Length: 153
Image (cartoon, rainbow, N blue to C red; front, side):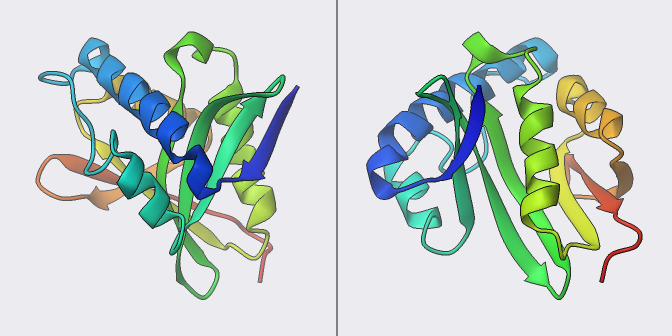
C-alpha cells in the first residue's frame, strides 16, 4: 500500500539518502556520471526546502521509499521541483502514483511544469507517458515539460 505524507525535518536524512541513490542511477539513462540537482544528497537542503515547498514522502508498507517537492508558481500553476523513488522500488508504478496524487492534491492546478535533463531518456519517457509535453528549454541542458489540465479553475 502506498501513501503520501507531509515530510518533516526528521525525515530529511532518509530522504537525502533515497534521493542520492535515485539520482545516481541516472548514469544508466545518459548522465555523464553520478550526481544530481543541487542539494539532492544533503539532509540540510532537504529540511530547508520543506519550509518553502510542499515536500511529501512516499511511504510503502510503512517504509519511506521516495519523495516529491512541489512549488506554487502562481495562480493555478505549480512546478514539480523533484520526484525521487528508491532504486529498489523502481518500475513498480510508485512514481506514476505520486504524479497522480500531485494532480489530486493540487486540484486547483490548471498547469503543472517540471524540468528534466535532455539526456535523461528514462524521465522523459516517464513524463510523456503521463501526458506532459515539452514546452521549452530548462537551462542549457534541460527540457521544460508542462501539463495543462482542462476544466479546472
